[in-house]
Image 1 (cartoon, rainbow, N blue to C red):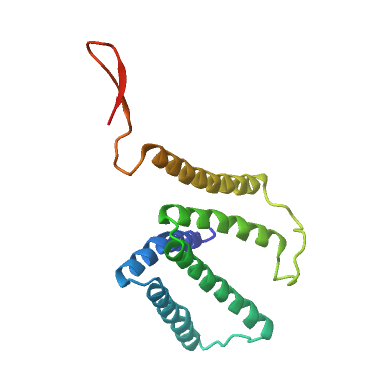
Image 2: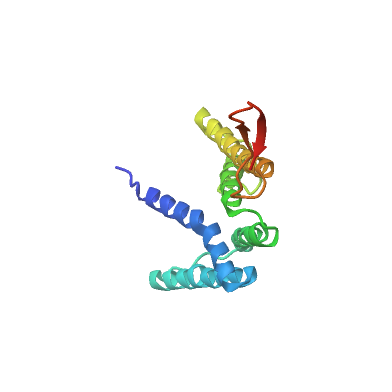
Length: 191
């Protein structure tokens, strides 16, 4: 039977990335600096993404086959990850995007982009994009559409909440209630 252990690591990656936005936001709030929080992310990357592979390469005694193309592509992957983390800082701290909406939008958009890139780019065959030899099952396309709908619902929820908030005034304030006078039958608005 084929190992399903990869699913455990998928779940762990989802857990890690799913808690990323709240953790970096809370860290920045405690440090009183979004860039100090981002710096701590960089330190964590260094400890995990630099030291860990060096130790593993040393223990296994197997050096990689360094090539300019491999180094460039892997470095672009790291750049994309670091810029993504910086964009989270900009979205949540610099431009005050609400964490409850920022994270779902990022994590709804990312798998759609990943799926589309993976569908047309097969670096094991060529570095140039090409049409897939075999199309995936139709359910993959349904999943892409549902992810897009999910992102749309998150945005709608944000707009709906802001519209509702504007109609009712300040948070926690009671909405106007129609009051019917007992003796005269007149209708008035009370707060």
